[in-house]
Amino acid sequence: MESLRKIEDWPVPNAAAAVVRADGTVLGTAGPQQHLFPLASVTKLLTSYAVLVAVEEGVFELDDPAGPDGSTVRHLLAHTSGLAFDEHRVMAPPGERRLYSNAGFDVLADTLAKAAGIAFHDYAAEAVFAPLGMRDTLINTAHRAPAGAGGLSTAADLALFAAELQAPRLLDPSTVTAATREVAFPGLSGVLPGFGHRRPNDWGLGFELRSEKTPHWTGTANSPATFGHFGQSGTFLWVDPTAGLACLALTDRDFGPWAAEVWPQLSDAVLTEAA
Image 1 (cartoon, rainbow, N blue to C red):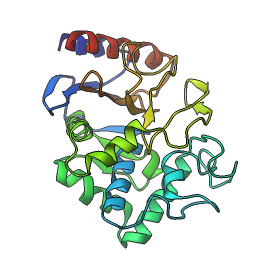
Image 2 (cartoon, rainbow, N blue to C red):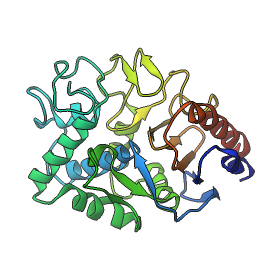
Image 3 (spheres, helix red, strand yellow):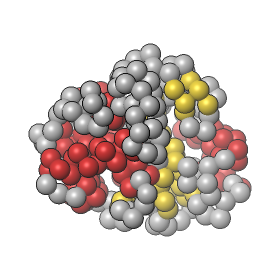
Image 4 (cartoon, rainbow, N blue to C red):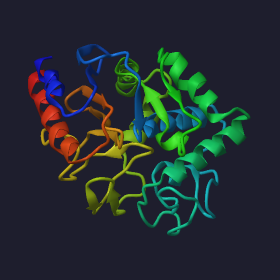
C-alpha cells in the first residue's frame, strides 16, 4: 500500500506498519516487520485477550471480585475499578468514573495468575501468543507495569493479532463483539490519555472505543465502530469493522504532538486507499 510509505517521513528512529483485512489478508506493510518494539499500552489489548480466554476457560468470571472492594474483573478491564493511574490507591467507588489505570491491569494479571495457578506472562504466552504464532511477542515482567504496558512485539506478530480480532479463533465471536463493540458502564466520563477529558469516554472490555471522540488518535475517516489502543511508546493498533480493516504502527519514539498529527493522517490515507 502506497499510503503506508508515509511512515518513512515520520520523525522517529524506526517505524513499521501493516494493514490487515477482515479475512486475515495482509494488505500492505512498511518498515522492518521483525523489529522488536516496546508496545506500552497496546499491551493492554494482549492482556485483555488473555483475560477473556481465561473467562471462557472458566478460570474466573467477569463479575468475580477483583481489586478494590466492590470491584470486579469487568471493572478492571473497563478502567472503572476506581484505582489510580499508576498506583494501588483508590480514587473513586467502582463503576462511577472512567479512571485509566495501569495499576488495574496489573491487578487483573495477579488475579488471573492466582486463579489459574500460573504466572500471567506464561498464561498469555500459552493462551494467546503461541496459538496465533506470535513467536517474538512477550510481556516484560521487569517493567513497572508489565500487564498494562510491558509488552514487546513486532509488526508481523501484531498483524496476526489484528487478524484474530477480526475473525476470532481463540474466543467465541460473541465474546469479542461484547468486548469491542459494547460500551462497558455507559455514560462515564474520563481522561483519554494524551487527548484530554471526554464525555463520555467510551470503553469496552480492555479496548478503547472510538465512538464520537474528537480529536482522536485514529483518523477522521474511521467509523465510530473503530476500536483499539495506542501506547506512549509511539504505537497503535485499530480495527474498523465498518471498513473491514485493521491498521497498526510501531515506533521507538514516545507519543507526543508529532504522533497526534501523523497518526490520523496515516489512518485516513489507509482507509482512502483501501476503499
